[in-house]
Length: 396
Image (tube, rainbow, N blue to C red):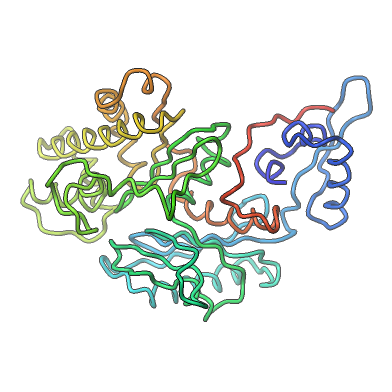
């Protein structure tokens, strides 16, 4: 049923072609889902020489989904129906540098209450809550009862039992994953990654992360692969928030870009990172200092992407996150040029570098897909589900 969510409306024949199941099996499964209320027929399409074929989609109001984005600057909570239409949204801004887990968990809980109330959805109709967090997500902490724990050095979190803390506020099913992986999930389902089998989706905000997709599956390694921001770009370079020196994040994360700009321009620390980065980008062409900082940023980012191209030879490197989108709109040609200079010719020729399609809300959307996958594939871990290909709705 994941294919029906990604590519609806589809006919039964389309589903058979996408899944490899026989038409009899597809018909039996669809009949059961229709009887349950999960799937509805939504019109028909003419077929060759036969009767029209019914078009199918998920019933948007069968259940609802909540996606949470724990970012660097705010906690964002969004509620969706099964068509992934956003019905309600709640934002809780963070005090810069304040990543107290108790306050963040309370903000998540308040956001859940707020979006359910705004949409007028019965709590029992919510299929689950997906929570996107920074850092390394560990499903087995070794401590009984703690559930999923998160290790986020940049936030000062040392194996924080996020699931256990959230359980104090809600009984809804919880699904917790890294924010870059959630954004990658959304882009692979509905955005710039649709139809791809090999891709890297980069999330650039205050920090930097990535989701690596290999043969249609998110690569996770032993714990939480994709900490691209903490690969070394300058040996012995600037100090990163993680404590190491020379990390990519210390050069292309929004916090680091603005620190370099303030240092070069002799400016005092500011407050709102998004507003500051927007002002820096507006200064391009009028300020030699701004131009130099942005040119350096494009060079560092291109070098980092070149490493990804050489390591993984993806079909695409997709730039997302609020800072990645802002930088890409201004600097994408320069980033591509720098990436080419740091890549081998053969893998670079097969890789496109582009912006994400879903915008800054992609993380919350990707988080909401976590409970959706469990609903559509009960008993199957979402991390094992390959991304499907595009299937046009055709007669059959």
